[in-house]
Length: 260
Ligand SMILES: *Cc1c(COP(=O)(O)O)cnc(C)c1O
Image 1: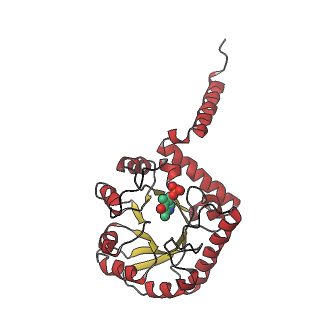
Image 2: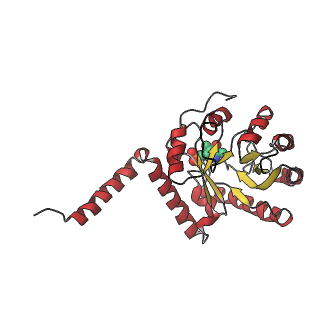
């Protein structure tokens, strides 16, 4: 007689597979990692009494090959985030799915605004009036307005991009007047290595700023916050867009040289 009935043996196999996958997350395939990430989002939403429909998953594919983007696309993923312009263009130009939404989430140099405005659907890292003006000016007329989020330096770190909360209102006022930009919300990257309560405090300040601005600027709705390490806290505090790289694509190759 067989040791296990075949149904029990299937359960057993799945358990072993599950164990293997928790011990060696790098061996997960991209579709498996997407499923797990979506499960984490669903659990965080449930705990926060929010609907998972309120939270968009952006897959951060920086430094990863186009084949990884395609693997995620084939699994239904449509939002992708990129930090390095040349690395991003190599993918965008060879990718013929026009239902992908490309999000620029890296530092913006002013000599790159023309390409960014033409190639991306979203920019999350706007923090200066000059860059905003250039993006608006360079947005091709046949495209809808470029969706932008203002990056807030919520932990007041001297080496980090983003406007301070104090300077936010003035920049919002300027950006909202630009014809070819649609100001959709705020983005932050809180200081790393903080306790969960300090992280919560930063995320909550972002949500309060968004709520307050939304009274005067109804298009300001999004909160782009939460990465692989702090997804659940960010969702608990109201994030509407999480930016997940490592948990979907595994650990990254080093960043390309500056200017790429
Ligand atoms: C790289 C990056 C991410 C993704 O970070 P992971 O920890 O790999 O999930 C998210 N947001 C920004 C701005 C990034 O540069």
